[in-house]
Image 1 (cartoon, rainbow, N blue to C red):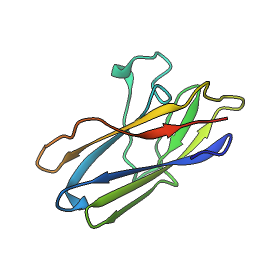
Image 2: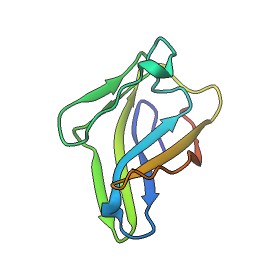
Image 3: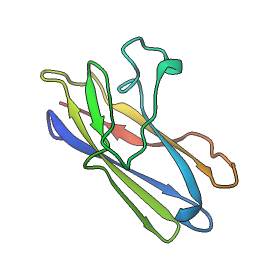
Image 4: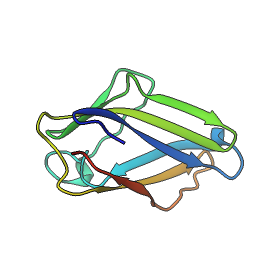
Length: 118
């Protein structure tokens, strides 16, 4: 999923009726984008329609360059990610996703897969 230093992460979400029913999506890569404090309560969010960014001492994700597409019941989100020079994972990290619909229904967190940065 990554090239050393820079790359992207692609997440997919499905709704039983239509992808336009998905209001919010959450993506978690173990502790990679937690604040440097390590506290999940300090984590922030970012709309993908602007120039915002999320970052810590390990990596940075920018809204600019993000790609969002909806086809039928599937929502696909691709996020550009840049890792700090010389930073790598000691072992693969689990990727988790969850969604909320326009009616307020929330999914449980689901394992999407593993990522490794050499």
